[in-house]
Length: 197
Image 1 (cartoon, rainbow, N blue to C red):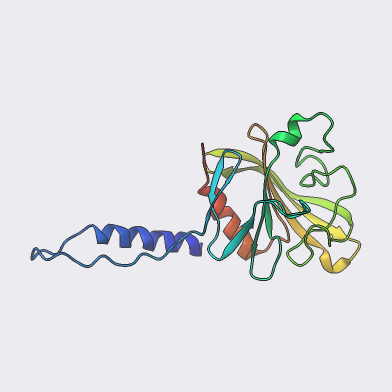
Image 2 (image 1 turned 135 degrees about the vertical axis):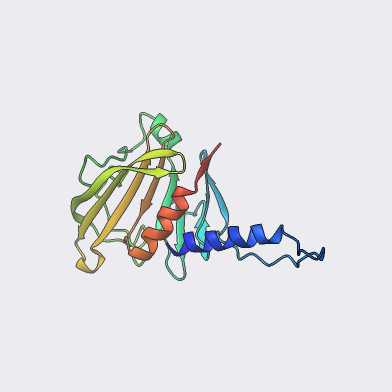
C-alpha cells in the first residue's frame, strides 16, 4: 500500500514539474523520490526491485542464484529462469505446481525450510506443507499459477509460509520465503509492475 502511495506522489510531482506559473515564470523542478530499486531481467521478465534490496544473479555455489534480499538477510525471495532446466529431460527438476504439497520446491531431493534467516544451504529439512491459498495472480500483464503454503520444519523455529508464482510458458518461477505482510506487499507491487520483452 505504501509503495502505491509513493508512486501516486511521484506521478503528482512529475506532473507538477511540467507546469509553469501563471506569471510566465518557470517553476523549479521538484526532486522526485526514487520509487523503485535496481532493474533486474530474469529470462523475459523485467522487474524493478524494492528500494533498499539487492539481487544475486549468480553465486559461486549456485545456492543463492536469483536471490532478492534486504538488510542482513541472505534470501527473502528468488526470481528464477527455469527454461534451460525445463528443456533438459535429464535435469533433476520438479516443475512448480500448487497441486502438490511442496509445489514451490523444484529439487528432486528433500525440500528445505528456506527463510530470510536460514538461506539455501543452511535450512532445516521441511517435514510438512499445507496449501493455504491457490489460484492465479498477476505478474505484469500475465497470469501466474499461485500458491501459498504453511511449511513445518525439523527445526520448528524455521516454520514459515512460502508463496510461489509460476509462469509455465515463460518458465519463470518466483518464490517468496518466510512470507510476511511487509514482504508480501513488496513482492505484490514488484510483480504487478513487471514487464516482458
